[in-house]
Image (spheres, rainbow, N blue to C red):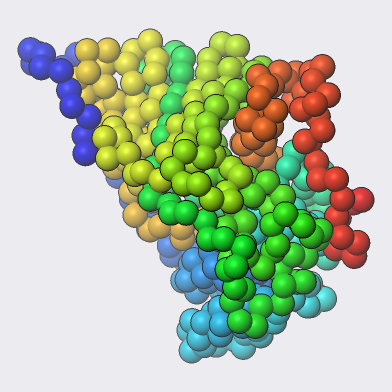
Amino acid sequence: MPCRQPIVARRRPSPRRRFLASLGRGCGAVGAALAGAMVAGGSRGDEPVRRLRVAVAGLGRGMGHVQSLLQIPGVEIAYLAEVDPQRLALGMKAVTGRQEAACRGVGDFRTALDDASLDAVFIALPNFWHTPAALLALAAGKHVYVEKPGSQNPREAEWLVAAARRSGRLVQMGNQRRTWMKEAIAALHSGAIGTVRYGRASYGNRRGAVPGKDRKLPAGIDLDLWQGPVPDDARHPAATLAHYDWHWFWHWGNGELGNNGVHALDVLRWGLRVDRPLRTSYTGGRYWFDDLQETPDTGTVVYDFGHCGCEWVHSSCTPLPEKPWGEVVFSGDGGTLAIARDGSWKVYDPQGVESGSGSGTTAAAGDLPHFVNFVDAIRGRADLNSPIDEGQKSAMLCHLGNIALRTNTVVRCDPHSGAIVDQPHCLALWGRESYRPGWGVPC
C-alpha cells in the first residue's frame, strides 16, 4: 500500500515536478516497448537468431529458468540436470512437446559439459554449488548464467570473477532487478532527488521452524552428488537439509542476507553508485523459533561508503505488514525515490508530496527479460545487465555482512581493493577450509 502522506496544502507543480512526472510517463512507455522487443527475442526482432543449445542444472529454482527459456526463440534446452529423480521427471514433462529438439535428463550436470555443441549452462543449484559449477562450465568453454549470490564466500567470489575474465565467456548473475529496475535507477541518476545520501531496503516472510535431525531425505536423491564439492558437516547431516534448509546453516548457505538480501543490496549499490564499503555491521538473531537454525531470522545490516550509506532490514518470520510502499528507498537532498518490487517507482519531495512516478513495465514479464538479455548478449545483440564482476560486488556485501555478524565485529575494508584491514579473526572466514577433491575447485 502507498505510504501515508502528511496533509499539506496542494500547490501548482513546479517545473521540476512536471519534468519528473513526464519522465515517469515517458520511461514507462519506453519500458513497455523494450519489454515487447525483449520478449520477441532481441532488440531487432526481424533478424534471424543464432540457435543456442543450453543446459539447466537444478530444477527447484531452475524450473523458472526452464519456463523462461522455452519462450525465447532459437533456444533449445538440450539437458536438464537434477539429483532428485522426482524433480527431474517434472522438468522433463515441462519440456516435452514444447520444443522440437530432444532434451536429455541427467543426474550429473557435468555430463552436459562434454557436449561440444552446448553453448551455455544455467546454474540453479544451491549456493555452495554456484562457484564450483560455474568454474567447471567455464573450463569447458560454456557461457554461464548463475543464480544469486553466485558464491558462498568471498574467496569463491574472487575465483569466479577471475575465471570469467580468463575464459572470455559471458557470465550473468540472476539478480533480475538489474533488468526490472533500469527505469527507476535511470530516474535516480538523472537527478530526480538531487544528491543521493542514503538507501534502505526491507524484507519480510513467514518462515517456520527448521525440522529436526530426524527429517528424511526425499526418496531417490543422490546425496553424494547433492553435496558435490562440499565436505560433510558432522553437526548438520546433509540428509536433513535438502532441498531448502541448507540456506540457514553456515557450512552450506548464506542465511537470508545471501538468499534475499543480495537482491536489494544490489539495487542499493547500483543506485548509490558505489562498489566497496569502508565499514560493515550486522546485528540480529534467531528470535522466533528455538530450533537448529544458525543464521538470523531477524536483523539489520548497515554499510558505510564514506560519502553515503545504506541498510537492509529483514524479518524472515513475519511479513512486515506495515512495510512502506517501496522495497528499496533512496533519500537525497531533493526528497526520496521509492522502488517497488515490480520495478515501478515514485518520487516524493521533502514535504512528502508525490512529484513523479514510473510503471516499471519490464518486470511485468517476470524473469523472462533478464534471461533474454543473457541470450541476446551471447548472440552479440546486447550487453549483459548483470555481468558477474558487478554481481559479485553485491554478493561481497552479503559475505562481509555475515562475517560481521559471526565475529561480532564492525568489519573494516580498503575501499579500493575490498580487502579486510587488520582484522585476522574476520579473515578466517574469507573462504572454506577445504573442498572434496575432484570437483574442479582450487584447493
